[in-house]
Amino acid sequence: MKTDAPGKPEAGATKSSRRPSKLAEQRLSGIAVSPGIVIGTIYDTTEAPAEAPRRDITADAVETERTKLHDAAALSRKQVGKLKTRLTVLPEEAQEELEPLLDAYILMLGNSRLLRGARKRIGEELLSAETAVQDEAEAIAQAILAAKGDDKAGLNRRAGEVREIARRLTRNLTATPFRSLKGVPAGAILVADELTPADAALLEPGKVAAVATEEGGADGHTAIMLRALGIPAILGCHGLTAAAARGDMAVLDGGTGQIALHPDATTIARAKEGLAAQAKERARLGKLRRLPAETTDGQQVELQANLEIPAELPLIHQAGAQGIGLLRTEFLFMNREDLPDEEAQMEAYRAILEAMGQDPVTIRVLDWGGEKDMEALAQGVPVPTGPNPALGLRGLRLLLRRPALLEEQFAAILRVAHLGQVRVLLPMVTVPSEVAQAREIFERVARRLRRRGEALPEKLPPLGAMIETPGAALAADAIALEADFFAIGTNDLTMYTLAVDRAEIDVAHLYDPLHPAVLRLMQFATEAALRLRMPVSVCGEMAGNPKLVPLLLGLGLRSLSMNAGSIPRVKQAIRSLDIDDCARFARRVMEQSDPKRIGEMVEEFAIKTHDK
Ligand code: PEP
Ligand code: MG
Image 1 (spheres, rainbow, N blue to C red):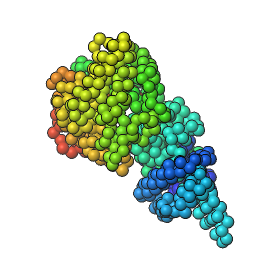
Image 2: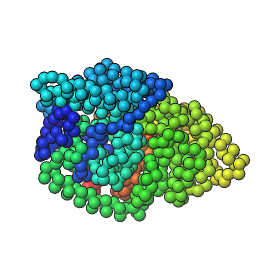
Image 3: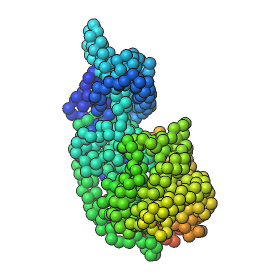
Image 4: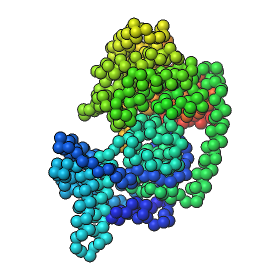
């Protein structure tokens, strides 16, 4: 592996302008979250100057702007602190260069002249926080540059550091999901500290060729969104933002999690071969579209798609999905300032139902809170705060606290339910009575609509529960008495069972759906449903991994919902399996206590089936 040390920034210089023209190849690794090879040019959003337009404020906004400044400084300190902890992945030479620089940044983001001055300008000159930061940073930089002394390079560097910190603060102050993604050139590899799910929802798959970020975990919503859009991506790539600069050429492989900056001729030639193989594989999998998802002994498996944003509908058709097993309705509430009213929601559901014909569509009501807080949500939905938002007012809990939100969403769904085969799904259930409470509201809304003469289906759509917390899984037999179907959400189930944030890179090594605790909970919930002959599916990311199909079928599952792009490979796996073999395999897996051993068994079984 060849490496090159990222250089220390010169004053006022961008990362690309401070580099020699020919650099050695540098390889970095992250978490492979969305497959695909891309040869492209880096578009580094962390590099963007984030020039915020000058903005004056009124006297009553002073405290708000000061709070914003305080929060942006705290966030910036956290970001730089994280960069510092990750220096260890860089060559020693680069570490020695960067460490003092990052220390200086952290100091500047504390009680520094820059922040004190900006605070003062907000109050005295009635400036927005970002304008105050820019003005103060420029004043400090000019004072540094005007200082007497021979070390001109040193003065330039110090002034550059102040401007760099001002840029970071400004970026954090103006961080709306609409921000820096507008100018992304076609074919770019987008590089960022972090991409929120709402940012990802705005990406155009035809335009952004690939994504690579410092932060993020394998099954966070950003990863899910990128997979859904079919954008090759690597998240959690340490050292990336320090090493990559706008305009650099790179080869990204979302299947292996590797990115090569300044790729040499061999790497480019290999990537081209990979691209050709990829196109061949796509054509081969495309032929599976019309074939049934059936095991060698004739067991049918239902393969459905998860839908994050309507832009995925054509992909769902291409993949030959048998309906939508999880429609995440959060997209309706993202990247907007007001709440979507009943009519707007109805139109969105109508368009999806019409596109899906008579294929079943499972609409999950708003799942807000936890990791999704990062998204820009319409005003009017309270953002859960508190020390542990993921354990707070999330999902159904929030909706039961704000029943008007739930009523409106139920009404919008019910008014279009006659157009297709609708099911309604409740997120983050932990207590059976939550389902009963939701059902009461559901039925009340239906009665009201009927009184108004709305055309509702004679039989109301089934109302199901997500099984995505250990509590729900262990109480599955009781919840089964209240719910009409189960959808096992393995992403949150893994997170809550193992106490590992699904989007947090620092604990990503502990996030493992193959941990026996997670598998036992899945088995318990599946068996509770099967005993009552109640439909049960898996709609977490596990469902889209072809290697895990034997285990899921062996546990008794016959309905899987996944990102559309995974359907052909999962179907291919199903068509090579015998259900009795799967059951035997699952029994052997369930006797194991070591997640690593289970991972090995899964690999071995996949190879064995492949070689048959
Ligand atoms: C899950 O938690 O597994 C799930 C499918 O829901 P989401 O990923 O939207 O939280
Ligand atoms: Mg979930």
